[in-house]
Amino acid sequence: MIAVPFANAKHHIADGDLLLWRRRSLISIAGRGRHSHAAKAAWWGDDLFCLEIREFHGGRAVTLASQVERHPGRIDVFEVNPDRRWPAYDRQGATRAMRRKAGKQYGYRGVAAAALLHLPFVRCFVKPSLSDVEDNSLPEFCSQACASADRRGGGVDPVPNLNDRLTEPADLARSPFYRYRFTLFPS
Image 1: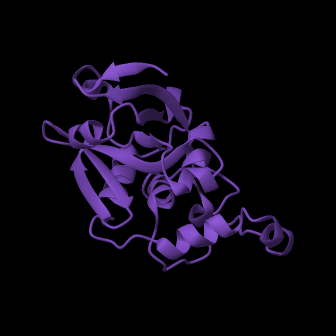
Image 2: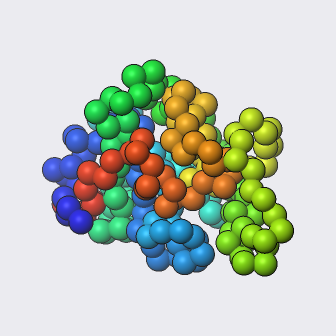
Protein backbone atom coordinates (compact mmCIF):
# COMPACT_ATOMS: atom_id res chain seq x y z
CA MET A 1 0.00 0.00 0.00
CA ILE A 2 1.24 3.46 -0.90
CA ALA A 3 -0.27 5.81 1.70
CA VAL A 4 -0.70 9.40 0.49
CA PRO A 5 -2.41 12.32 2.28
CA PHE A 6 -5.42 13.56 0.33
CA ALA A 7 -4.03 17.11 -0.05
CA ASN A 8 -0.92 15.73 -1.78
CA ALA A 9 -2.80 13.15 -3.85
CA LYS A 10 -5.80 15.04 -5.18
CA HIS A 11 -3.99 16.78 -8.03
CA HIS A 12 -2.77 13.38 -9.25
CA ILE A 13 -6.35 12.10 -9.59
CA ALA A 14 -8.02 12.64 -12.96
CA ASP A 15 -11.62 12.60 -14.17
CA GLY A 16 -12.78 9.01 -14.50
CA ASP A 17 -10.13 7.45 -12.27
CA LEU A 18 -11.43 4.46 -10.36
CA LEU A 19 -11.90 4.55 -6.58
CA LEU A 20 -12.12 1.22 -4.76
CA TRP A 21 -12.92 0.81 -1.06
CA ARG A 22 -11.02 -1.86 0.85
CA ARG A 23 -13.20 -4.53 2.46
CA ARG A 24 -15.26 -4.08 5.58
CA SER A 25 -18.65 -5.16 4.39
CA LEU A 26 -20.66 -8.21 3.41
CA ILE A 27 -20.04 -7.49 -0.27
CA SER A 28 -16.29 -8.03 0.07
CA ILE A 29 -16.73 -11.14 2.21
CA ALA A 30 -19.01 -12.70 -0.39
CA GLY A 31 -16.98 -11.29 -3.28
CA ARG A 32 -13.80 -12.30 -5.04
CA GLY A 33 -11.28 -9.87 -3.56
CA ARG A 34 -10.28 -7.23 -1.05
CA HIS A 35 -12.52 -4.41 -2.32
CA SER A 36 -16.16 -3.87 -1.42
CA HIS A 37 -17.21 -0.66 -3.21
CA ALA A 38 -16.41 1.12 -6.47
CA ALA A 39 -16.80 4.74 -7.59
CA LYS A 40 -15.32 7.19 -10.09
CA ALA A 41 -13.52 10.49 -9.54
CA ALA A 42 -14.69 13.72 -11.20
CA TRP A 43 -13.48 17.30 -11.01
CA TRP A 44 -16.07 20.10 -10.83
CA GLY A 45 -14.16 23.35 -10.83
CA ASP A 46 -11.61 23.15 -8.02
CA ASP A 47 -13.48 20.40 -6.17
CA LEU A 48 -12.80 16.69 -6.56
CA PHE A 49 -15.94 14.57 -6.32
CA CYS A 50 -16.73 10.91 -5.86
CA LEU A 51 -19.44 9.67 -8.26
CA GLU A 52 -21.03 6.53 -6.90
CA ILE A 53 -24.09 4.36 -6.55
CA ARG A 54 -24.24 3.43 -2.90
CA GLU A 55 -26.63 1.27 -0.91
CA PHE A 56 -29.26 3.31 1.00
CA HIS A 57 -28.38 6.39 -1.13
CA GLY A 58 -28.47 5.41 -4.79
CA GLY A 59 -26.55 7.43 -7.37
CA ARG A 60 -24.88 10.51 -5.93
CA ALA A 61 -21.95 12.89 -6.10
CA VAL A 62 -20.11 13.75 -2.86
CA THR A 63 -16.75 15.38 -2.28
CA LEU A 64 -13.93 12.87 -2.24
CA ALA A 65 -12.45 14.72 0.75
CA SER A 66 -15.56 13.88 2.79
CA GLN A 67 -15.22 10.20 1.90
CA VAL A 68 -11.52 10.12 2.80
CA GLU A 69 -12.40 11.58 6.23
CA ARG A 70 -15.11 8.93 6.72
CA HIS A 71 -12.99 6.05 5.40
CA PRO A 72 -9.32 6.81 6.16
CA GLY A 73 -6.90 4.38 4.54
CA ARG A 74 -9.65 2.44 2.79
CA ILE A 75 -9.94 4.22 -0.57
CA ASP A 76 -7.54 3.01 -3.26
CA VAL A 77 -7.08 5.15 -6.37
CA PHE A 78 -6.62 3.39 -9.70
CA GLU A 79 -5.52 5.21 -12.84
CA VAL A 80 -7.83 4.50 -15.76
CA ASN A 81 -6.33 3.52 -19.12
CA PRO A 82 -2.69 3.37 -17.96
CA ASP A 83 -0.12 4.33 -20.58
CA ARG A 84 -3.07 5.12 -22.89
CA ARG A 85 -3.12 1.50 -24.06
CA TRP A 86 -6.70 2.01 -25.29
CA PRO A 87 -6.35 5.12 -27.51
CA ALA A 88 -10.07 5.27 -28.33
CA TYR A 89 -11.04 5.59 -24.64
CA ASP A 90 -13.12 8.71 -23.94
CA ARG A 91 -12.39 9.73 -20.34
CA GLN A 92 -14.84 12.65 -20.43
CA GLY A 93 -17.56 10.46 -21.92
CA ALA A 94 -17.11 7.89 -19.14
CA THR A 95 -17.20 10.61 -16.48
CA ARG A 96 -20.32 12.13 -18.04
CA ALA A 97 -22.00 8.69 -18.11
CA MET A 98 -21.21 8.16 -14.42
CA ARG A 99 -22.40 11.68 -13.53
CA ARG A 100 -25.76 10.93 -15.17
CA LYS A 101 -26.32 8.06 -12.75
CA ALA A 102 -26.83 10.56 -9.90
CA GLY A 103 -30.33 10.24 -8.51
CA LYS A 104 -30.77 6.65 -9.72
CA GLN A 105 -31.78 3.85 -7.34
CA TYR A 106 -29.32 1.28 -5.98
CA GLY A 107 -29.50 -2.18 -7.59
CA TYR A 108 -30.15 -4.45 -4.61
CA ARG A 109 -31.50 -7.23 -6.86
CA GLY A 110 -28.39 -7.08 -9.02
CA VAL A 111 -26.09 -7.44 -6.02
CA ALA A 112 -28.14 -10.39 -4.77
CA ALA A 113 -28.04 -12.07 -8.19
CA ALA A 114 -24.27 -11.61 -8.49
CA ALA A 115 -23.75 -12.94 -4.95
CA LEU A 116 -25.91 -16.01 -5.60
CA LEU A 117 -23.56 -17.09 -8.36
CA HIS A 118 -20.89 -17.67 -5.70
CA LEU A 119 -22.91 -20.43 -4.05
CA PRO A 120 -21.60 -23.87 -5.08
CA PHE A 121 -25.03 -25.38 -5.71
CA VAL A 122 -26.12 -22.43 -7.86
CA ARG A 123 -22.85 -22.43 -9.83
CA CYS A 124 -23.50 -26.02 -10.90
CA PHE A 125 -26.80 -25.21 -12.55
CA VAL A 126 -26.70 -21.55 -13.61
CA LYS A 127 -24.40 -20.33 -16.33
CA PRO A 128 -23.66 -16.60 -15.98
CA SER A 129 -24.17 -14.34 -18.97
CA LEU A 130 -20.92 -13.06 -20.42
CA SER A 131 -22.47 -10.64 -22.90
CA ASP A 132 -23.09 -6.95 -22.26
CA VAL A 133 -25.53 -6.86 -25.19
CA GLU A 134 -28.47 -7.91 -23.02
CA ASP A 135 -30.76 -5.05 -22.08
CA ASN A 136 -30.89 -4.85 -18.31
CA SER A 137 -33.35 -2.26 -17.08
CA LEU A 138 -32.78 -3.06 -13.39
CA PRO A 139 -31.06 -0.40 -11.25
CA GLU A 140 -27.27 -0.71 -11.15
CA PHE A 141 -24.96 -1.31 -8.19
CA CYS A 142 -21.56 0.32 -7.66
CA SER A 143 -19.14 -1.77 -9.73
CA GLN A 144 -21.73 -2.41 -12.43
CA ALA A 145 -22.17 1.37 -12.78
CA CYS A 146 -18.41 1.95 -13.09
CA ALA A 147 -17.99 -0.80 -15.68
CA SER A 148 -20.97 0.38 -17.73
CA ALA A 149 -19.79 4.03 -17.60
CA ASP A 150 -16.41 3.03 -19.04
CA ARG A 151 -17.99 0.71 -21.61
CA ARG A 152 -20.90 2.89 -22.76
CA GLY A 153 -19.53 6.38 -22.14
CA GLY A 154 -15.83 5.67 -22.55
CA GLY A 155 -16.00 3.10 -25.32
CA VAL A 156 -13.88 0.43 -23.58
CA ASP A 157 -15.14 -2.65 -21.73
CA PRO A 158 -12.88 -2.82 -18.65
CA VAL A 159 -13.80 -6.45 -17.92
CA PRO A 160 -14.32 -8.23 -21.24
CA ASN A 161 -16.21 -11.53 -21.19
CA LEU A 162 -18.09 -10.59 -18.04
CA ASN A 163 -21.49 -8.92 -18.07
CA ASP A 164 -21.50 -5.52 -16.32
CA ARG A 165 -24.26 -6.74 -14.02
CA LEU A 166 -21.93 -9.46 -12.69
CA THR A 167 -18.88 -7.21 -12.32
CA GLU A 168 -17.62 -6.88 -8.75
CA PRO A 169 -15.10 -4.38 -7.34
CA ALA A 170 -12.43 -7.13 -7.34
CA ASP A 171 -12.96 -7.67 -11.08
CA LEU A 172 -12.24 -4.00 -11.68
CA ALA A 173 -9.12 -4.14 -9.47
CA ARG A 174 -7.73 -7.04 -11.56
CA SER A 175 -8.52 -5.45 -14.92
CA PRO A 176 -5.51 -4.25 -16.95
CA PHE A 177 -7.63 -1.21 -17.80
CA TYR A 178 -6.88 0.16 -14.30
CA ARG A 179 -3.59 0.54 -12.42
CA TYR A 180 -3.26 1.00 -8.66
CA ARG A 181 -1.68 4.36 -7.76
CA PHE A 182 -2.10 4.97 -4.01
CA THR A 183 -4.36 4.78 -0.96
CA LEU A 184 -5.89 7.97 0.44
CA PHE A 185 -5.49 9.19 4.01
CA PRO A 186 -6.79 12.42 5.57
CA SER A 187 -4.41 15.38 5.27
